[in-house]
Length: 142
Image: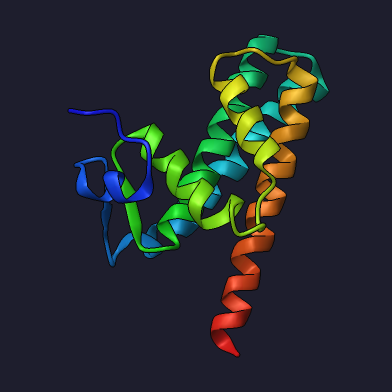
C-alpha cells in the first residue's frame, strides 16, 4: 500500500472510513480519556508507580480524545496516520485545535517527554476536546 498522506487518500484506503455509528462511540472514548488522565494524575500525586506510566497514560488519554474528535465527524480509523490526518484537516487547519498539541502527542507516543509535562499536555488536550465537542453540540442544538 502506498504512503497515505492526505485525507482523500485515507478515505480511499482501508485505514479511514465513514461510519454513521461512530459518533455514538464518543462518550466511551471520553470516559477512557478521563480514566487514563486520572490514573496518570494519581501516579504523580501519590508518587507511587512508575513515572514512565504517566507518559503512557497521558498518551492514551490524548489518543482517546483524538479518536473522539474524529468519530464525532462520522469517521472511524484503522490507522494512526489517517487518524492524525483527519484530526489535522478537521480541527487543526480550521483553527479549533492547536497543532502544537498534535506534535506533543507524537512526542508522547515515542515516550520522549517528561512525566509532568506529559500530564499537563494531556490535560490541555482533554480540556480542549471537551470544549470543541460541547461547542459542536450547542451549535447542533441551536
